[in-house]
Image (cartoon, rainbow, N blue to C red; front, side, top):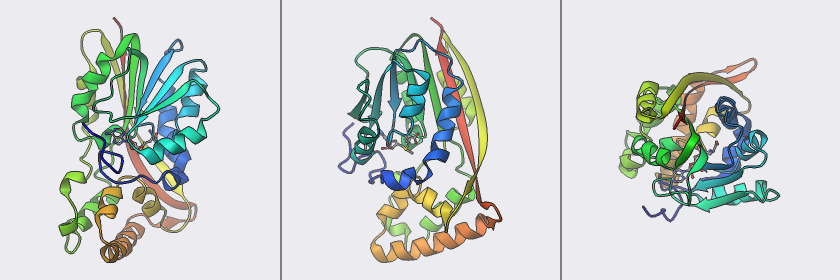
Length: 269
Ligand SMILES: C[S@@+](CC[C@H](N)C(=O)[O-])C[C@H]1O[C@@H](n2cnc3c(N)ncnc32)[C@H](O)[C@@H]1O
């Protein structure tokens, strides 16, 4: 599948600086995911949807000598990633679509943090990724599980109304991810053992409209980038007001509960 001119499957441009404004919160699930992998001898790793490279230090911490390939379709994200890891010769990047990327040889570890949900057909890709994992290797994935949260519900309710709906292609919007059990069954099979869990993080965000700042750099991008300037301004004002009501400021900041799904499959044979 060709990479879209603007860089990813949702056909909008990523802004690494805005995405990384919450780097600590966005990287935390990757830290938790990798802490369960337990494959100290992994020598080759692919990070599917590596984004601006915020996960690379975490991978390097666990696997100091491994060769790591970051795969992403966004030119902007890859540029940011290359800058942040320029002094590590064993990290390379490839601009490619996850749906068609095949490593040159089977890898010891395939990871993906907060990326596969951008692909409506991502569950069908899991066996393809698994086929390219070496015996003894591991697949480790985290996807959000927060599509019923007010942040998303309000976004899609508003986007479905006039005058916004006529500008938005529903096909560019994120689909809900599957229940964790579905992913467990997807990646299980002969020669594979599976572990999975869910966590709801309680992020404490500071500043004005922090939930809007968070989501406008990620899940809301397809909606925001589809709107012409006047509608965008109006949409932003309405959406911010709705988010402020749904996520009120407390004396410690604005609390954003964020549910995430984790699954790990280990190839035993
Ligand atoms: C939310 S970011 C996650 C970045 C990083 N993995 C992290 O832990 O924060 C999702 C990334 O997936 C990438 N992506 C989305 N669809 C893709 C596709 N079809 N092929 C390759 N990368 C894709 C985007 O460009 C973006 O960098």
